[in-house]
Length: 432
Ligand SMILES: [Zn+2]
Ligand SMILES: [Zn+2]
Image (cartoon, rainbow, N blue to C red; front, top):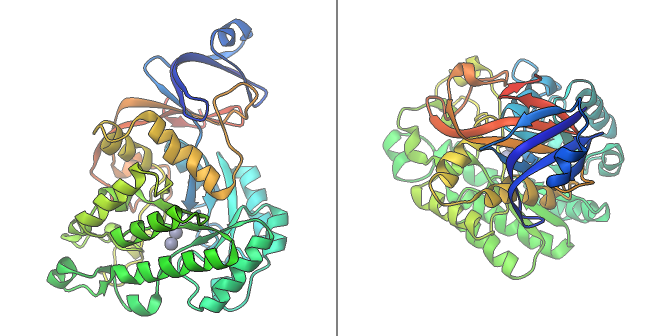
C-alpha cells in the first residue's frame, strides 16, 4: 500500500521536527517527508487529508493486559489490539499474568503467533520473571528472549523475597533485558483496597498505605544499583515514589518509570460512589500525589505514560467494592485524556505527547525507535486535536467496559493509525 498523509503537522522531537509537511509511506516504510512526498507519490496512492491534524511517531503502550490465553471473555489479542488502534497506539507490550502465566518460550511463541494472525497493532510480549510469577524459581528468561520477549515482570504482585529479586535481576542483566517491577509490599497492603488515609477511614475501606509501594520502589532501585540491571517501575502512584526515582536518576542509576492516566487524572475522592471501576492496584491516591506525579512527568523524572489496561468481566466488577477485581481499561481513553487534561490545559505540547507516549517508553524497554523520517518503519499516529469524545459503553472496541472514565466528555483522539505501512484505523474506525 502506498499512502500519502497530506498537510498534517508533523511533530517529532527526535529530529526537532514540528511543522506542516506531507509524508509518503511505501512498502512499510516512510519513503519521503516534505515537498518530495507528494511529488514522489504514485497516482494510485491512498491520500489522507491531514489538514488540522497532528502527526506523531506511533504511540506505544508498555503496560497492557490482553488476557489471552485464559480469559478470552474479558479480552483477546484481537479485541485488545483493536482497542489499541482505536486509542491511537501502534504497539502494546502484553503483560504475562495470563492463564497460564507467560513464563516459557512456548508461551511467548503462542502470543507472537497469535499476534501475527489476529493482531491489529504490534504486540511485544513481556515474560514472567519467576515460574508462574510465584516468586520462587527463576523463569526460563533465555528461552523467552529467544522467542521475542522484550522485558520481564511478575506484574500483579512484587517478588517478596529480596534475595530472589536480586537473582532475577542478575539473570536478566545477563540477557541485557529490562525488569519491570510492580512495587507492592503485600504484607503492608494486607487486605487494603483504597489509599490509606482520611477517605479510606471515612468510607470504611481497608487502607493501602503509600509506604507499601515506596518501600519496594526503594528496594528495587537499590537492587538495580547492586546488579546493574535495567529497571522500569510500573504505575508509580505516590509523591514518595516520585522523589525516590528523582533521587536515583540524579545518582545515575538505570531506572525508568511510568504513570497511568488514572493516577494522573483521578484521586481517591473518585471512590465516593464506591464505583468498582475506580478500584485500582495501586489505589488512586491524594491530590498531592497526583500533583507530584504530574510534576515528575513534566520534569522527566517519570519517563512515560502507560495504561495498565486491565479488562474485567462485568459480573466481577459488579461485586461489592472490597471483593471486586482491581483495574480499569485504558487503551482507548489514554490519548483523549492526555490531550484534554495536558495539552488543551496548557501543561504539555505535542512534542511532550510524543515524548511520553512514543519515544521515552520505547527507550525504557529498548524497543525499536520509530521516527517521522524517510527510511523509518511506518508506524504513525494521526490525531485530531479537536475531536469530541463521549466515553460511553458503546465507545469501546475492548471486549470489556470497566472504564474509570465512563461518562467523561473529552477533546482529542486518534483519527488514523498506520502500523507497518498499513492503515489500521481510518477516520476513527478500526480496520477500515
Ligand atoms: Zn501492576
Ligand atoms: Zn498491570
